[in-house]
Figure 1 (cartoon, rainbow, N blue to C red):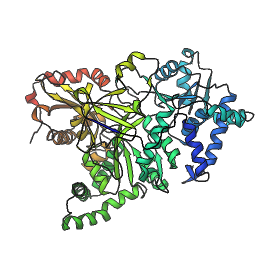
Figure 2 (cartoon, rainbow, N blue to C red):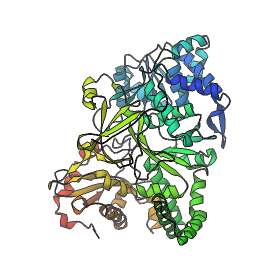
Figure 3 (cartoon, rainbow, N blue to C red):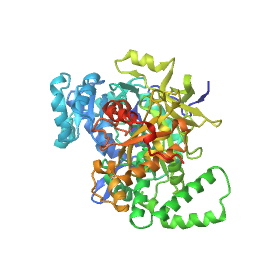
Figure 4 (cartoon, helix red, strand yellow):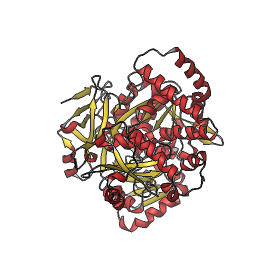
Length: 608
């Protein structure tokens, strides 16, 4: 059995809780900007001490409103400054937050609030409030619902003016490391979401150890980041708490369509993103170059960037001719992309899905080191991560301090350590099933190289076994296809079938630009585009490229382009943009059947 375990580099403090991280930060750097909020076309800094004052004022309001230590409070909001303000205020009041994705339906909200036993809920908008009101009759435990759009945070702060500082200090010190800090419901690509009980120690010990491991990223003077991934997800939640501990200035941009202007004005030193964001940055740049008649230059620049990075990683000498080309492309292409991201981004932490070596090498040549990591809600986000001085593109890095990772039966990744959750809320059967002793069974399949770098090779429950007995990992085919600019999502099918096939959707954001660049009407509907010969040929090329990386038995022999979009709202994607494979398989069963109704000889797949 392959196993890598790294001892913690920061001594554990079983009494510490998350509120201590903010108190310590204020003691160290009271006047340092810990946050920045939009102000006109720029940003207004908020110091650590000013943030603490706002946190305490809101915590007092929660106490005055009847929140007791241990009470669960639901929170539905986008990624804004107020998200972390509410998060910390709940900790200071002794409560437990139940974060809810702002795209959640009324029935999902009802499940999170009822299963957790929440007594109150804070919502950001009138739309969120309407969804809660729709199911309020089914939530007898929920005494209060506060709307931020109605000025609820200011009203609560006013209501709490008579609550003493001593009471808040007493409340915030009640929890120790073993106590529940938050109840995060897994977004659930299968089955009903389960509540993951994450403790104060999970966050405190992981933040303290990760800050040392990632010190070049988060402890560098002037470090800053712009959060745009939903803070209801454990990935961004962990980073927001890590930033407080490490003293990173954090801004927020909930509207990803405004991301590039926000990056340009905020100028972060590092980013947190999922692979789809990097794909979008690359594809947008490529299509913009194509529209300006510079597509050939961009593609040559990309190829040079990727090859340059590969040679550097392999420790090989860069040929003189490539040095000249690289310098030219740096001036013409790479520098402009760096500037578009604010000009200061040196690192990007990526998680939730495999990035792919191509994009990793491309951004590396831009001067952006993408530190891919691996983890789940149950591991408080990261279990492994590439480090600034210990990184391999195409892997998810070495094990973090305080964490152990082993490969169990069928090479399933199993994790134990400071980051592993306590249990599934009120679900002892699921908890028992998820553990082998103190090892959490992730359901993901991986491999280690000799240096202890982990690679994710598949998902145990998603492995397809064809009628011929061939085991196929869908991600190996799906990820390269999804990198194509016009592809929105792709799901590979073929379990117990004679060959592998694929369902493909188009990206409605990228499609109009691609159509215009290819002499087609930019306003073509998804339905028409799905049948268009040029569009099908482009998707075919993406599939051909993916097929070259696998054996004939694993290759995609047929595909269908669906005239629809898979989104979180449609129920086909999780909030972190992962596909809900079981839902898609059920909803598009007729399309899958159709793929296998006609003999495979009719396919136009080129395997050359």
